[in-house]
Structure formats: C-alpha cells, structure tokens
Image (cartoon, rainbow, N blue to C red; front, side, top):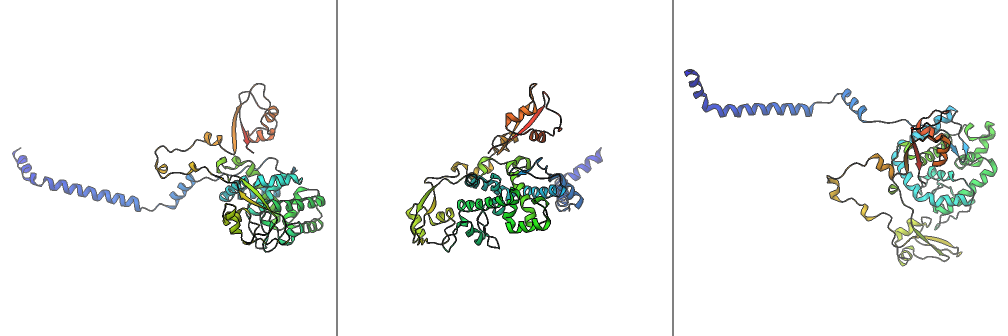
Length: 403
C-alpha cells in the first residue's frame, strides 16, 4: 500500500499531461473517422440502389375509347395503339412543355373556341393550333407563321393580308377564321374530320395522292412520312392530357394558369405615322401595343386603302396577378411553412376527385348520369369489371374535370 501511494504521488504531477495527450489521441481518431466517411467513394452498386429507391417513373394507361371529333380511334390495331402511346408518353414526360400548354390554353382557347363554333368546326380542332405552334407566334424554317402556321401563299389563298406592315397570320382571330375556311373546304372533300386534320399538315393534294396510291380511305390505314404519321396522334395525346390532367400526374390549380387578357378594341380606318406616339396617346407603350397586336410588323401603319383594322388594348387598371401572391423573403425561412395535403390540392385543382360510397339504390348507369360522366369512365377510374355493377358500401372515385 505504501508503494502504491508513492507511485501515485510520483505520477500526480503528470496527470494533466496524460489527460491532454489522451484527448489529442481521441481527436485524431475522430478526425480520421470523419475524413474516411467524407472521402469514402460510394460504390456504383450503392449509388444505383439509392437512385432506384428514390426515383420513380410510371407507365401510363391509355384512354379506353379515344376519339377525334366523335370519330373513333381504332386502338385495337397494335400500330395505332403504340403510336398513340408514344405521343402520350412524350407529352406526359416533357413536363415543361406540357405545363406551358396548360397555361397558354387557358388564355387562348376562349378566343379560338367561339370562332370554331361560329364556323361549324368541331371544338377538337383547337388542339391543332396547340400542336402546330404551342400557341405561340413562331416561324418555322419553311416560313410557316403564327398560331396556325400558315405559309404565305396558303394564308393569302384563305383571305389573310400579308405585306410589309401587316401580317394577319399573327392575328389569332383572323388566322383562326382562315383555318376554319380550310377545314370546311377539306371536310367537303373527305367527309371525315380525321383526314381533314391530317390534310392540314400534309395538304389536301398530298393526302389525295396517298389515298389514291395506297387504295385506302382513312388516315389510320395510310403509310405516311414521319411528321404526318405522328400528327393526329399528337393531337389526340394533348387533348387527353389537357382534359384529364390528373390521369397523367399533373396537379394544377386554376391560379397556375395564364389568365385571359381583359382587353378593349379600337377600330381605325386611317394610317398611323408612328406607333410609339400613338401608343403613348392611348395611355400605353409601344411594347404593349406590339405584343397585343403582333400582326403590326413595322413601326408605322400606312393604310393607303383606308381599310378598317381592329387594335387591341388592355383594359385600364388591369392586374392579371394579385399583388399579395408575391412571396416575401421571410416566408422562405418561416417555421410555419408546410406541404399542402393531397386533399387540399384536389379542392383547388383543374380536376377534382370525389370519393363516393355506393348506396343500396345506386346503379352504375344512374351514377354516370348524376355526375355527368360515362359508365366506362367510372369503370376505368375504379378498375371495375366490364360486366359487374356497383355494390352497396363500395367506395368509388369520380373524377370531374372543371371546364
């Protein structure tokens, strides 16, 4: 015991040094472990497993009975089915483009639809303009211009004015009326709206030549160039995605859309020497005047024939987006932020889901009438057998699209 006490007394002065050394050793070990964990390379297998567990891409379900202007699409033919599926996949997973389609359609379809109706053209033809240009005033390498992509000779043939100062291919209303004249002429020839749509891409002469050469009488039996062979299927695809957004994974609110432009129209029948001065006189800017009237191609409008033109202006005091929608800097760091629930999204979506519990007196036919859908739609949404009816207590999903 005496020796132990003497050893303790000898080591006592070095106790602090031992503690410091031990702490240093522990720190070195921890640093090495940290360095190892940071610099350790992730194996390809681990990375692939992480990717596969985190990223998901889903297949799509084709619409049960697709149609264009009431004309059935023969999806029982595997070539037709796969052609439609291809365009549905391309437009479903090219999300940036399709999101812009949703936004622009909300602004421009209300302009196009009444004109189609006035001329007796089925509403499905509004999707032709969407496929042609994405509802933008683009110019193709071949010189096709505007929403409806008219080349100059065809545009003039259907009544559009084109000169150095005016190009009515950029006028949505006028170019839609010209497109309607083409559709009516083509329908008188083919008596089939699907062939009318195809002829808008290939031309009536091109369709006539292929029908005669191949000895068939409809679009779906024709062997065509790649662009025209995809054309109608692209129209069918965007139509189905835009009318059934939730079926393809698009959760969009009304407020996400581009709102229609509240506008007034001023008629002029004289020249304008300087559009910038004219815009200022009207309480706007040259920029806004040109954007709302893209058919004005120069900074002047001579109008030697004193022709009547309609100029579009925004209504005074127009505010398309509420000011309180802006996100403040503090919001991004707020502890109160949360993800909305699927139910909350559904309440404000373009399509809304209703969950319905079947009553004893309910039948599939009466439910279809009640909610303004077809029996086939209800079967499709709920994976119901083609022969069975609904049963009391069964929970159904009813998808209702806001128009």
